[in-house]
Image: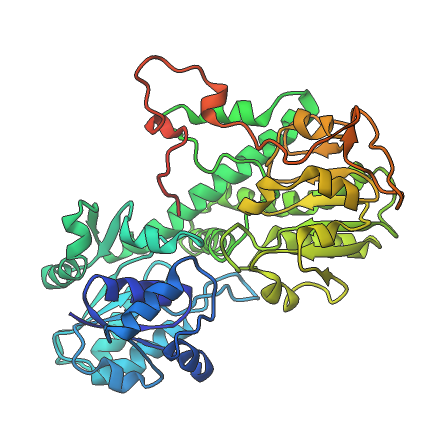
Length: 493
């Protein structure tokens, strides 16, 4: 089929490339000429694993192209996908839908009478109704249908999420539009991808409800982690014990510095605003948003407590800036709150991130010093903060790290390591929802006055990463680790 995807941002690029991979002819349209030139030359404006290879493959096959000309691009297409951004408006937190409506108004005149408009952007209740009103106003005699088809792509695994979806949601008010979407997704449906047909308004609400519920799980386990620290319990053990309940599941029960990214905060806030506008208050969602903001701010106090002295004049190495691993996305990242708070308290901050430093420079205070490696960030620092769960941070050479640090203190905000393992190597180790472990034996100073990373005369290098569900739970014979969410790879949102 011939498809046009409007919006060459995260959702539009991934969706366009994956539609081309399904065998459709796709043109992606955006108003940013520089971005379109980059993409036409095979250069990526965002970091997403596998996306550059997929786009370049289908540029070569001519299944995928890029353009700034919307009117020309939508002529003769079977479906127009609207995948533009819907950021929160600053005054009230309501999604800004101006780009969605602008695309509808600009494109409708050039569409075929039997084409469909598919809203893939995350939009609140009733947006599809307004898009349909625009169509009827400008093309009263056409049979153009408007469909809601929300995306469920996670940063860092978006291509896999598209190709192996948990579900495909199609919100359409008539049969012909559903038939077109079924044909577009035919290859995925043939591989047993579940399809849920709903009303358009229900489809619009599904995405918001799913993200708000996942955000609720994160905020909940973070509050449990705080209780664990004060009551001498272990949040990993609590989370695993809770997550083995099939009704709950283990995903999104990892304690951390708070959720970030482009979706959870924005979508939870929008859902709360929808509740207000329909006189159906979303009190739980409102509490989740408040809890998460408190969590982010509390991380500055956690670092100060771990350092054990006023932060003014201290050098803190922050490893990881993006809101999660395998993305360069800095939107709502907890590192923003942490680093801003550290600088406000008078600390000097050195930072390293494998993919997010260019984006971070546009957001974080100019006082932040960026380094070429995690070990450079730690050089002569008073403490290291593990902020993002990048794979390379799970494999740090702790001996080399100790030799770099002025004081062997690690604040692990992602529970990447086992407390006993790190403390045994001479560190003061502070994690989430587990008791702090002070260094067992002070490292021997080297010639530079830094810790040598040695204990009892032997050097230690790589630390052990955190326990898994299999480590913590004794299984009956024949038990499969894919059951009950233990170490399953099923995807979230």
